[in-house]
Image (cartoon, rainbow, N blue to C red):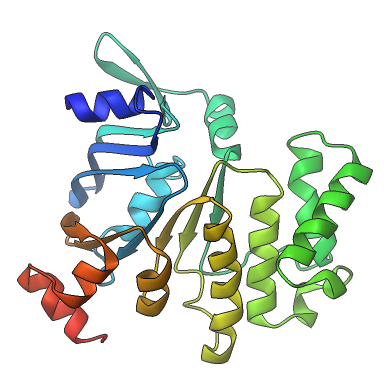
Length: 266
């Protein structure tokens, strides 16, 4: 492990919320991540862009150990994700301990995955009650606050089928926030939405970013990335091709692959 990564993971800088050190992931014989190294400081927003199949979503899923890494190290808030290390070897954590780590990381997927037979409020209170053993009255009060925060205070008793895609995604964000995560991961949260509904979800994400939430966002919304991201990372074929400020990457990309990708979008 590099000295910089070790320092950040140990919290000596007090800044590194995510530290990835040469992370590799294979699916069978297919290498999907080929040595990803990057850092996300507390309160920062990192946006991942790149073509489909470049490894962006896989990297996101490795951060909360929904996927196991094959090599390298991933740290969140100074803690090794999914494993414990003894004498230089990694041993996977017990599922209960891995689940404890995962509770502190909120994730919002392309598809909303709400319980269809439960109201918006019931979807939001489920995990705090069942997983964190929060009293129902307390969970309901918190859920009402979160639904108001995402602009859905008047939809607390609506079922998912009664909500638009944008509204369902905002409920999904409220549900993730109900666990009081230290970090939020977004996997193309607007890609399944009709164009006219994209803005309402991005506005909630802007508010989250301005509140100081650490976020990693896989997105094709270049305007959002330009406005909100502290760092923009372009991935292709399982590697970080280029990383820097959104203004630099989107305006004057250095690498040919970045230029070719952006020329198709901008």
